[in-house]
Image (cartoon, rainbow, N blue to C red):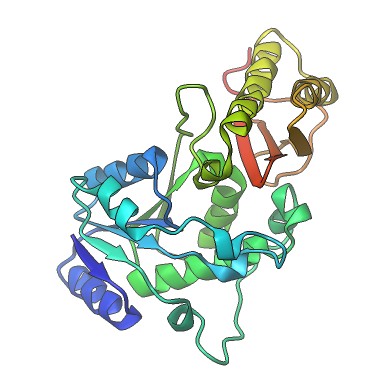
Length: 283
């Protein structure tokens, strides 16, 4: 496992792999690694000749009032967690290299970036798509791996890859959950024990929605109300949004169909937590 910190060295290694016709799997992260990241890395290891894990807390995807400066950073812990997975490269670039003096170029996926989380984090997805584009240009991966928990992010990156003719396959793997149902997230580290228990209301609300849909409920407003009632039953949970939408355009739906995305964001203490499910195999 080799640690690379400069863009030039990463480009040199990637170029060598490409000349050898090797496949490259990229798992982009901001560190604070957990079990869900490991699932992405293991899949990338199966699919590709080489695997690159990038760790970069990207400043451009944080709003001014958000947690950039306190976002969890512990490289020693991250290295311990991934020990034995068989990663080839850990790429840890510096912000000054990723965004050098005079940097003026951004990448934006219109419309998709202004919905759901984008409605309350107006600069977030432009930061995500810009940094992911840069990583794709530096490494030129064959495949890049993302988690379904960040459904909107995955949808936006897929759209970007198609629109800009990027020769990379975007692989999205299912959400990985802890024993109590809460989706793995780096921001779970912010939660106190009491807040961690309160966070269980999020998967509980989605499980109720899933059950109601499987029982035949298709009216989106009714499902939203049921989710809202569950979330608001927890005093520590502050509901930010519930979206029931078409999974490619993210347009809100009145009637739930097969594949419909049901997503929400909830604030608990200092943590902003997102989660989602999709309506599948409806009869």
